[in-house]
Amino acid sequence: MNIFGHRRNGSLQSSVLYSRLVVISSLSVLTVNLATGQEIRTDEAAVHRAVSFVRAIGAREASVNGRAEMINRPGTTYRLWNVDLDNGSVSVSINPQSGVVTGYSDFKVSDLVTDRTRKHDDLVLREDGLVWARAEGVLRAAGLDKLSMVRKGVTHNSPPDGRWKSAFDGFTVVTRFEEPVQGWKGHLNSATLTFDAVTGGLMLLSGSDQWRFDPPGRVMERGEALQAMQGVFSQCLANARLRGARGQTDAWTWPGNDAVLDKLRLEVLKGGNSAYGVTEGARLAEEHRARVCWFYEDSEVSLAIDAESGAPIALTVKKGSPSYSEKLSGNSQVSVLRDPELESAQDSGKSPVSLDVRSPGARRASATDLLVAWCLAGACLVVLAAALVHFARHGRFKGRASH
Image 1 (cartoon, rainbow, N blue to C red):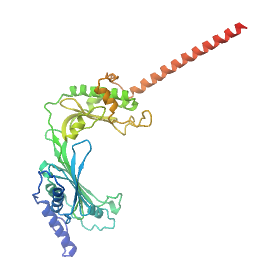
Image 2 (tube, rainbow, N blue to C red; image 1 turned 90 degrees about the horizontal axis):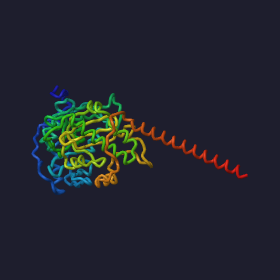
Image 3 (cartoon, rainbow, N blue to C red; image 1 turned 60 degrees about the vertical axis):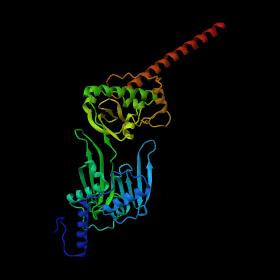
C-alpha cells in the first residue's frame, strides 16, 4: 500500500492511478514561474497567460488558438480579461493589471463530475494533505499565492449511497483560502477551488486579488459609534418618509440604545453600497478598498459605518423582512435603490423632511401613528356628518313655516 492509501497490485488500473498520483503530487509542489505582476494589454498576451496557466496546473493540452475579450463593468473601473480555450470548454479570467488568474472553469471536467454512469472505484484526492498540496500548486500557478492566503477549510462531497440530489452532486472536493487582515476581524481577498475527486482535475476556481486594506487613523469608541448610528437611522427614516415607504419607515425606526449596543461589532468591510443618497460605500467598492467599520444587523436592516469617520458605508433593508414586502403607491416593491429625485433634493438643500430621530421604542411605532391618524380622520367624518344633518333639518323647518 502506498502513502496515499491505495493498493498497488500490479494491475493496469492501479498503475495508471499511481502514475496519476505522482503527476499531481509533482504539480502540487511545483513553483511555477509565470508572468504575474505584469500588466496584460493585448489579446495575444491574455491568451498566452491563460494557456500557460492551464498547462501549469496539469490540465489537458489547451489549444493556443484561444479568444480573449476585455470585460468592463458599467459605471466602475472594474476590468477583466476573459479567455476561452479549447472551443470554449475552458474559460480563464485574468486581472489585466496584475496578470493574476482569478477565475477558471473546465466544462469537460464538469461533465465528468456530473456523469451519473461514471465508476468511482478509487479517488485520487482522498487525503486532505494531498488536496491542500494540489490546491496550493494551483494558487502558485494563478499568482494568488503572493497574497499570503491561509487555509480555511476543505470539504469532500459525494452522493450518499449513490443517490444524486442535484446536477453537481458528483465526487468533488472544495478548498477555500482567505487573506486575513492582521489585528482585525475579517479578510480581504479569497479563493475557492473545486476539484474532481476522482481524477484530481480542477473544475472551478473563483478568486480575487484586487482588494486592498485602508487602515484607520483612529477607531471611534462604542458610545461615539452609537451616536453616529442613530444619526444614520434618522437620515434613513427621513428619506423613507419622503418617499412614502411605510415599510422602510418601520425598518429604520430606532430600535433603542441597548438593542443596538448588544449587536454592535467591529469588522473589516470590502467596499459598500449606494443607497438613500449615500455614496461613500460605492466609491470604496469602485476603488477596491476595505475599511474597518462598526457593523449592526438585526432581522430587518443591516448598517455599517466607517469606524474612523462615522460615515455610512453599507446600509440595506433585508429582503426577507416583513417591512421589505410592504407595497408603495402603485405596484413597486420597497427597495433601497438610489432615488434620483430624493438625491437632487438633498443636494440642493431643499429636502422638506425633518431629520429629527424618534425616541427609542418598538419597531412598529409607525403603525401606532397610522392608527391615530385613522382615528382623527374618523372623528372629522363624524363631525362633518353631524353638521350636514343639522343644516338639513334646519332647512326643512324653514320650508314648513313658509306654508
